[in-house]
Length: 376
Image (cartoon, rainbow, N blue to C red; front, side, top):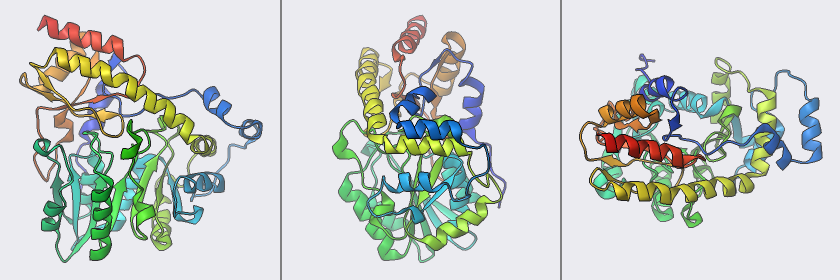
């Protein structure tokens, strides 16, 4: 492995996320309390949680969790699920297993940094499939075909996308899966925002359901709104690949906390209830952001997310990094400037910033943002 470069997004949030008064860039949906989650379960669920020992659990994940995960897919069973400590651990090991020296890989840009950085660090030759503002951040399959080589082993994508909120239409996504299958290329799809699309017709099928070799990444953190559980998973019908990844996991988390997997299983069995709640929050916040940007159309362009709970407005007033820092320092409002999505592979527009639509209490933060703009 080559050295990993500084994780810009996490470094930036480490400075501001827990010290600011108004966190307008949240990447997750509003969390529920432990009591609220347990109330969604059965009496047996609640009794089992209080009685469970605080011991090690299976490295693969408990049978209860893996059955619950499999229940979210159409063509995946519990034997095709491997649990991880959040999505980050899963991505860290999957990129290293799927690419290496002599291989070629393609990743979408912009993306959550580890998908690019870890792939580059493997020694693989990595190309960017650039998502462009001028064409609505769309997945361009013709451009992708032009990037492919005889040694292309991996295509890594993220839909719904972080930070843009873009979701391809189902036909385009199925064509992507078919292209990978025809070329013998492994498809890795980060699907952590799936499930809270305001227009439910835009919810994509999952890659692991469509292909026997594709990997689907998901986590309790984003659309479920339960990041404190630190439970993620990979689904793939290639059992041998999961067995290799399970051996890599022995060097990091080994296994997840038992209470976290127990609670995650309850959440997954009640996913429609959680998704309906979180979809409603996104839907309610959308007109608030829309009105804010309409009032300041001289400074901002924006498109709401098609999927997930983040999007990537454009700032027309100058230096977006300066805007974000002064906004945080003067009014305690945090947004995420585009510089944290810097890519080694391609240019990311520097005049954008990420905002979130998944949290409650948005109004006070927007008032502080407007107060800041009035003083400028």
